[in-house]
Image 1 (cartoon, rainbow, N blue to C red):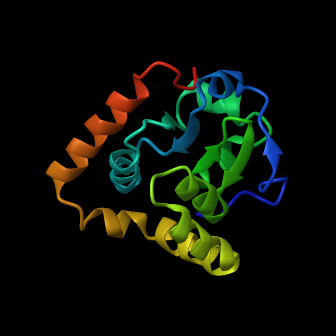
Image 2: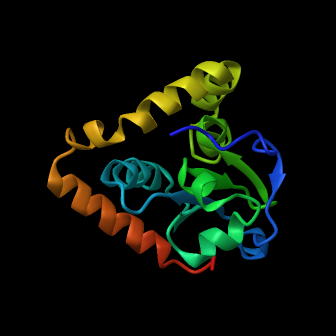
Length: 160
């Protein structure tokens, strides 16, 4: 899955992000039908002890509101990160700011930011092979991951 076309991916402002701004949380828009995506997001949510990340399934109406400038195909093409100030990053471009929001994430964020093309290629490689990678994750781990993501989606201040 490629990042959506360069229609302002790096610094796009999101109109429907007022609730995120008030909560100070970052929206992480992910594919709820992808076990690997939920498992990976669950790892990030465990790292995020301060609950700064607000998962939002791309299949939910809130995602369409947050990504109104993208076509449905562009929305589903990759994951997206929306900052509390309303900036959107997608695909590999979202990794550095996401990591900066997590405790101890500044160094890995700096590494990914230093090599943006490599980060984007790495993201695309993983995204294009997520079905195969998902087979490596035990079903129980995917189930627990889905529960963790669902619990975090229920926290106050989620993008609704």
